Amino acid sequence: MNSSEILRIVDAIHRDKNISSEIVFEGIEQAILTAARRHFGENAELVVDIDRESGEPSVSADGEPLTPEEIGELGRIAAQTAKQVIIQKIREAERDALFDEFSAIRSHLVTGTVSRVEGSICLVNLGKVEAMLPRSEQIPGEYHRVNERVRAIVLDVRKAGSRVKVILSRCHPDLVRRLFEVEIPEVAEQVIEVRSLAREAGYRSKVAVSCFDSKIDCVGACVGVRGQRIRGVIDELAGERIDIVRWNDSLQVLVPNALQPAEVEDVILCPMLGKVIVLVRDDQLSLAIGKKGQNVRLASKLVGWDIQVMTQERLGELLDQAVTAFGDVPHIDEDLAEKLVAQGFFTFDDLSVIEPDQLAAMGELTEEQCDEIVARADEESLRIEQEERETRQRDRAARRVAAEIEELSAQRSTAEPAPATDEKAVDPAELAAASADAVAEADAVESAATEEPAATGTEESAAAEEPASSSTSEPAAPADEEPVPADSASQTETVPSAEATTDSADTKSADREDEVLTDSTATDVESENDESEPGQEEVGEISPADVAAEENGKPEEESVKLPAHSTDGTSTED
Image (cartoon, rainbow, N blue to C red; front, side):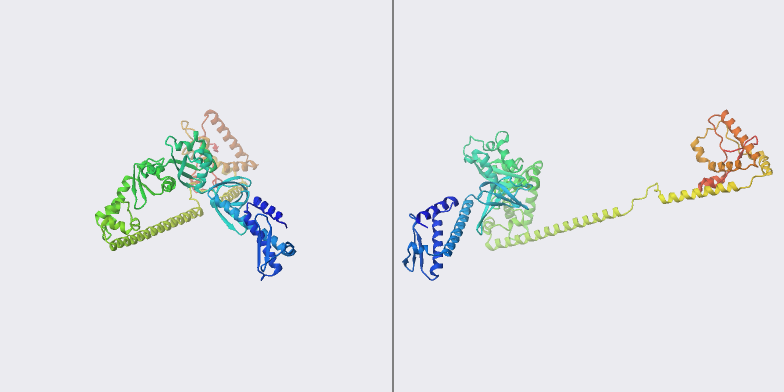
C-alpha cells in the first residue's frame, strides 16, 4: 500500500462515516503495529508512524527502521489481522461520532418513521440509527403503526456495545416547546420567549410566554388567527388541551394568570415554606382546582411554588385550629403561634421543616428550645400521619366488607325462589293428573247410567202422581223476575252433562216409550214457554247436595239431579 492510497482511503472514510482523519490514521497505525508484532514477536520494540501530509508509513523494530519491502513481507495473516483491527477501529469511531451527534441534539425535535412495533415499543428509523420509543414515553391513548411518521424529542443517548441507543419521548414538556418553535415563527426567532411550561401528556398543558416588545401581544401571536397556529400543536399532540398565559415576574399577578379560567380574590405568599395561598369564592373553588386537581397542579409546576386553593371561611378555620394546636407545644406562646400562622405554618408537618435560626428570630428563643420545638412538631406530625393511615385502612376495610356483604346478598337473592303471588302457578303435571281423573269419573257415571235397569210403570206413575205440594213449594221463576244470563246459568247449573247422559240412556231403552213421550211433552211445554216469554229462561231446582258438591270442589258428573215438576203435572228438565 503506497502513501497516496493511504491518503485516499483516509479521506473517503472521513467523508462517508463522518469520522475524523486523525482517528483513521491512528487506526491504520494500530493495525500495522499489530501485524508487526505477529511477525517480529511480542517482545520486539516496535514503533509505527504515518506521515499526515504524505501518507508515508514508517516502522522501526528495536530502533532500526524497516524498509518498505520488509514492511510488505509481514505476511497474509498479519495483513488480515490488520484489516480486522482497522474495521473495529472504524466501527468504534463511527459509534462515538453517532453518540456525539445525538448527544448534541438532546431535547431537540427529530422526525422519523416507525419501522417496527414490538409489543408496546416502537422502533423509529432516524436514518443513521434506529431509535426506541417506549410505551412510557408515548402519549396515553396513542398507538402508532408501521411506516407512520412520528415527531419526538431525543430524551437520552447511550452506548450499547458497538451501537448507539437513542431513546425518544413524546411525553416530555420540551416537546411542546419545540413544537411552538416550529409552528410559531416569533418563538423560533426569540421575539416571544417560552418562560415556563407544565404538562400532563395527553390531557393538558400550561405555557407561560413573554415578549420583549410591549407592542406585541404574545398570547395572541401564539394562538394565531382563529387559533390556526396553536391548532397545529394540538393536532400533533393528539388533541391535548393547551393553556397559554402571560408571564409576570410578580407572583401576585402570575398565580391568577396560571389559575385561569378561575377568578382569584386574593393571593397570600408564604416565602418561608415556598407556598402560595389562593382565596377564591365558593362558586370558583372547583374551577380553580380543576378535574382531579389538574388545574392547580399544573399551575404549581408553572410558577414553581406550592399553591393551595381555599375559601375565606376555610382559611379562618385553619388559622384557629393552628393557633390552638401550636399553643400546646412547649415554648410557643400565643404571640409566637400567631406569627407562625401568619407565615403559613398551619400544621405540625409545616412546623417540622422550619429552620431553627428562623424560629429563634421569630420568638427570641434559644437554640435548645428551637430544637425541642422542631422535635415535638416532628413527633406530632408522625403521630397524625399514623392516625390518618390507620383511618384510611379502616375505611378501606369497611368498604371491602360492605362490598362482600353486597355481593353475598346479590348471590342469595338470585339463589332464592321468587316470592309466591296471589295466583298460584299451575303445574302442568298436576293439571294433566286432574284431567285424567275427571275423564275417569265421567266414564264411570256414564256406564252407571247405561247399566241402570229400566224404570217400571209403577215407578213412573208414582213419579207422575207426586203430590202437587212438592211442585208448588218450588214454583217456577215468576214472569217479572229478571232473566238469568246464559253465562250465570251455565255457572249455577252443575248437572247438564249428567242429564244429557241420562236422556241418551233412556232413548236407547226400547221398552221406555212412555218416558220418551213424557220427555217430548216436556220439550213442547218448554218451547211454548220460550215463544210466549222471550228472553226468559226457566231455572231448574238446585238441590242442597249440588251446592255442597260444588263447594267441596267435586266434579259436576258426581251429582245427578232429579227432574223438576211443573205446575201442570208434567216433568221438566232444565
